[in-house]
Length: 264
Ligand SMILES: Nc1ncnc2c1ncn2[C@@H]1O[C@H](COP(=O)(O)OP(=O)(O)OP(=O)(O)O)[C@@H](O)[C@H]1O
Ligand SMILES: [Mg+2]
Image (spheres, protein in one colour):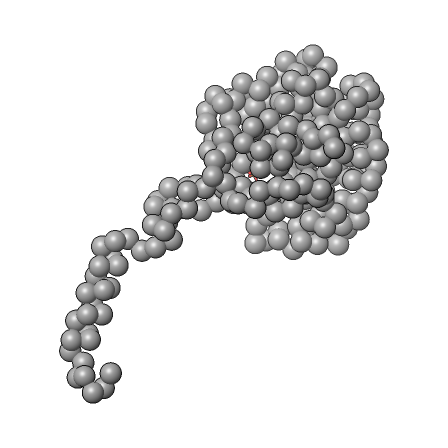
């Protein structure tokens, strides 16, 4: 089986080499957890390997995506100019060829196919960031839409990352749609530990893959991008601070000392 590198060596290892070619993988998680940056790695790797790359953005403008990618030296601007990458802007309602005026799934699929024809034959990589945007006002259609996208674009040689926001308010939209249709689920999470925001990644599903089942920590480094390492979730992260534990122990001892023995 052919697998595509995600562009992050540690994640490829968690995936027994990478994402199987032709898969549609849901990338889910709360805001700011690294979904977009992860997708950028996948595209940057595709450009490097000569894949035909398409990035659909519904959350940020094309310029914003290019600027964010620039911070990690992914060279999206050069890739677009060099005809290796097409960024379809579905946010700003631009009147131009590589834009979507409305969040319509059939229009999306048509536009992605048009982009693939423009880029030429060969292996394709597609990011849809986000896919949930297409059904937020009609969650009942999520499953049908996901299936449609997977069926049609799979035939066009794409391996796809479909971002699916996950928050309390959208969990229903997510749960209703893509998770069973997707060939894989990569979930990003965040916690505040000791007053510090920490991000984590877990491969929840990847068909035909003996993948890691362990939570890994995600670190985003300016100029470089995402680095992933085994999560060091120590006992201290979940336990109370030492001083509090000592105080509780002391209180228990004192209370026991006060209690008459025959009542114990
Ligand atoms: N140049 C940088 N250096 C270090 N960290 C950065 C840099 N640029 C962005 N970040 C971090 O990455 C976060 C954004 O990550 P990303 O855009 O991938 O999140 P997301 O999961 O896509 O969120 P959303 O669901 O809101 O789109 C920022 O909040 C910031 O913490
Ligand atoms: Mg994002």
